[in-house]
Image (cartoon, rainbow, N blue to C red; front, side, top):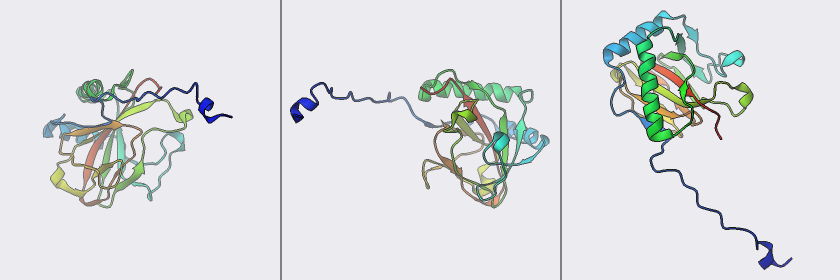
Length: 205
């Protein structure tokens, strides 16, 4: 075969780029909740039935202290409605300005999490490559720091790779695409309290 004819009908691929306004990791520039509101959330989280955090989620979840050591509880939708309304409002604004995902909504209860000294969560993603394990389709994850940053050492949230830390302060949050790998580094002093929320939308396409 003549090499000159082999690619006669091949067209040079078009360079495809994402809009410059898009970002898959977005930190809030001001707190979503005041210290008093953070305390209300912590009080509510502690009033709910505590669980040892599992790995895997759903019916296939299991306790695995080599991967995750923390305690969690779930805040029902009927509780703290102003919190849920505020979080959904901030998510929609953040999605419009940075993610551009379709059909976004609040689909799961908020998770209150406590990491004691020595607590951590190894590298993981919040959605599954096997879509049989959906719904909901997790597209945006949010971590919000409830405790004051002076109350613990360690426990940094790292995204994408070791050392890429998100230095959260009380009431501040980071929103990131749920397919991004992340971890919570071991807490070396004190107790780290946070709120984790996932937002779903129409399937990726």
